[in-house]
Length: 263
Image (cartoon, rainbow, N blue to C red; front, side, top):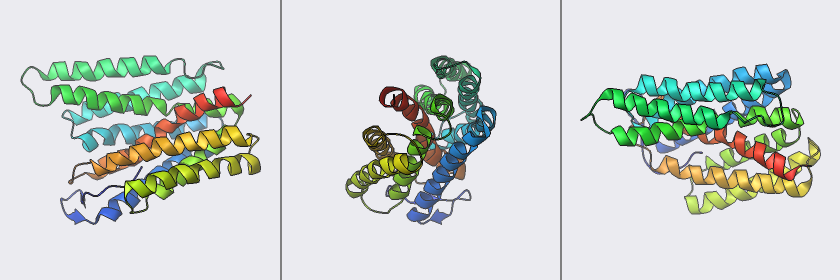
């Protein structure tokens, strides 16, 4: 989610106004979320392609966002974990569509640890790289939740509620106001948009939809702080990952809320 106070720079090292980076990151997140949700109408395999594309974007950009060494290898591991988790969600029999996601996360974390071991003793930022890349593996793998949600109750219902509340929270997060103002607004507007979407476009009751919207808004508002702590010289791929990763991970939250709240 967008926000923050630091100045951005483009790939050539030139200074970019802060709001440009924030709006760009938010717009990319909105586009990615919309694409993943819209692809659900084409079936699990079409949605798998959309989720895989987003996973590659997150995987490629995450090491740039955190400044992790061995960027190419870590990018491949992060994206691979996301694609593997999404493929399992699209292909396994239900209703436990995310049953293989923990395995994808575990293997991915082990892989990024091995990458740092191969780099050898004395290399810089080995422990930080394991934690940072491991977080990327976790977030990227959770994107499979968008496929799981679509398969659980169809292309409408909670998928639309989650998608619309995510987009609303992202749009509010693009406002260049302090977090103390934007965070409550993002939660409130996401909580209002979700039941409206449930009533008009889906068949989700008001209370479950409102709970889902509030939870999604709260998660994205919390991630907004990441933008405040990002490096001042952030490459474009890092900005893409910063926008996409939180919205991508909301998919798993939508799936579990769907299973708990919708009969």
